[in-house]
Length: 404
Image (spheres, rainbow, N blue to C red):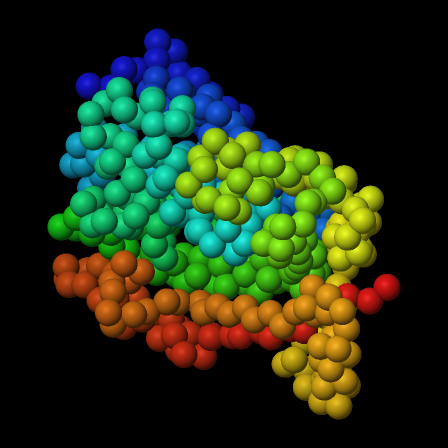
């Protein structure tokens, strides 16, 4: 049904050695403008301001998630019973899962009020994209791949393998981000995890013998979030960017002309269904207009753009450290009374938990297969995870404020 290449295409990779492509449709998707655009979007955004080697792109991660899907197909017990079509849906969804990311990723989602998952679906289904043209050669394929991203429950097994608490996306980015930042606690034994997984009645389970590797994986993810992804310096850098986006949006609503060439950005601000303008945006594009804004006549954009260029970051206060309440109140009043103060004072909260459990949904449940063939959820089987369900919840609240 799907044409195979006469000779496999390979990509060198520091984690996997080689990433192999056997199907023409995968090769064509990799060469699409939407996938190639991800070369120009940094995977870790502001984290590179702390971990200077974290320069890898979302393109690299997308290939990695695709390769992790290949490893699932090759190593997970029960995947041999999945049809070729569903395996291709799986590989394609893993490859395309991040094409909806905007420049500097999550900071951009807030300003256009559209998640990258929703934008990914729009790009997959839009007749304006290369990706859609390639997928549409096979009737229904674009809709099926989009259904996996949307969690429509048409392919529940594939959905859980692409996006859940134990999926190919997380297993690649944890390993890759740890490698690129040098953070040793992010390394995971993904081969052991894959070999411990088994498909039973269309659901992913983990053999009891592999639970220790799952526990280590969950703790690695937990530490990576609070030590890398939520690092205060990274968040301070991204807060500057959010301030620039916010100021541009406010000026646009006021009808003020911006001192930079930001047509695509403005088009997406007005209409996040403007696919062509969205595809035009990447980190390079944003870096270019921020460079222009260092000469902006608007005092807010001028200050923030120069701060962004020169890594002049916001100061921050960790509220968990019980700072001086009087100082906090004075600081808040200072920025409330300051012209444009809202752009230079931000209260930011982040939170996380080692193991997510919801009685309303089982999409994130990790099931353990016992030797007698019975199943338990991971938190029922592992006393460590049971304890972490409540004790690992952590919330960090920070005050970011900008001073010359």
